[in-house]
Length: 246
Image 1: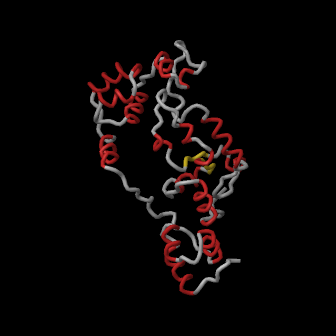
Image 2: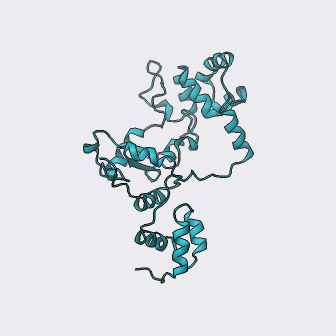
Image 3: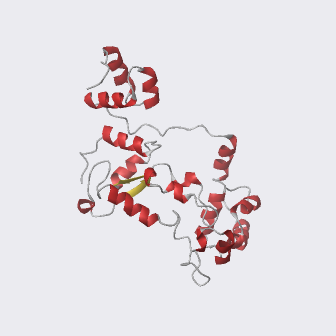
């Protein structure tokens, strides 16, 4: 039971705003009720968020905008030849100076696409986890861990925490016939992980940034605009998908 009685005016505001408005805006409009009370009342009124609403647009700096423009610049043959020569032994900060048209992530992705790998000595010189014992001169880093060391373990932990059931619709792996997808709530690429140069994957792959969901729900969740796990779980609770085929 809500601690503060809802007025008809407040209920009308909730019905009007809940479908497409941010929870912060609703709280500002209904100041007598906190977030939990709003969600509880919305459930009682059987209100649901519009999952088709566009992703929240975040303000970006001029530098970020310029980086987005650079990310769509095509590579020339000459640039790819230079990348083949420099990438195995050169840090991304230096590569960005050589290729000002591209971001560090775009450079690393292009290197993998054309089959260029970091030398083992490069990882040793950085002192980071790239110099793990399983990599050697005979067995160099080959780009097979784009989500960082321990990603497979992080996936298993997320699926186990979910009881091997989709955290949105409840379908289990046995009925689905495949393993659940493990989705990053904040996109992995947003953390700027560069193999051999930083360990940002550790932050990106924290369990608090992961949800285990089926393929169908994964597709729908991509454009939901969630920013943290608690918000994602509240979104699941208020937008049930029990009617989907399991």
